[in-house]
Image (cartoon, rainbow, N blue to C red):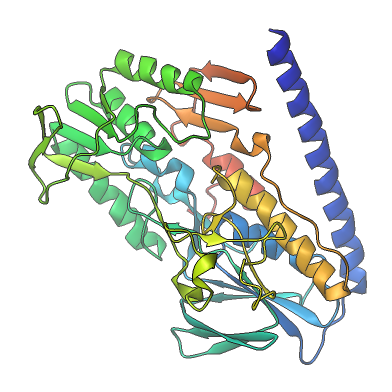
Length: 413
């Protein structure tokens, strides 16, 4: 009990610190509105990608950059795609639009401090101190600084894999139809998305066989302790989900078939859903040294969040595309974005850059385990705290994120 009180005390301290950071940013933005001046030929800070990392970096920079500079955000998607709710919306209909949040209201920079381009980046050509970003439309945007926040790719239920809202909603509807028509559902991959989708499917359709296969003996990755693993296993058992751990079977092609396990047993499926990891979108910076990339394709960065390659000090990266520790979530992406923004300002002013070190509290995790239960997990790597709730909205925390991004929830749906 004492250890739990200590960790909750630590959380309170973190909340106070983060509140002070937000207050300081708001005060800075007020001053910036009166001091920032337009320039005929501004130097561009180009941000490629506007999920949590890129969008927050744009907000921070637009409210603090010196006169003579401008933030240019290039985002291929028409809407901010809220990935947290995708496993739920793959099972429950009537809420799809809530996963697609209109862009724009979050930045609030003074006029001329930022611009938005909805387009796809085809290539990045570095050129001495800066470079150019070439777009699918044929346009090219010069940059003095570049922030790569391109995230990672995967299929549903982890990512939508569509650039516009209407097509994304159709993809969700198609996944729901597959689940509803199936009798034997197999989910491969015991990360958060796979766990949540499997639990929701069994809670909503108890008559169906639902199996979750994971390659490790423990669910999730190394950033989580056994207390959370055991809580998930217990709840999955209560729901009736069949857990198969420590297996990495060959996945057959086709919409129906059998998966053979090492011991010779087989699992039949007529709906197979793969949640076996995400591929970092790092191809745009293929010109970086080979040492800058991990075997998985993630970008190695310095503590300043500049890319590891010393030849390109003007390129920064943040979010799921980088290797900066085991935690890859929105909270971590926002912290990295803040550091990137601060360091670009420091670089412009000739000041010493700060360092990013992943903190334990960034890994605080909330998981849904069926439609009626959620668990929250906190660990400082010495103590694990787990608590649960049996009250949750069908659309989960969608409204909270809409408000956080400066949009009145669901008004534009």
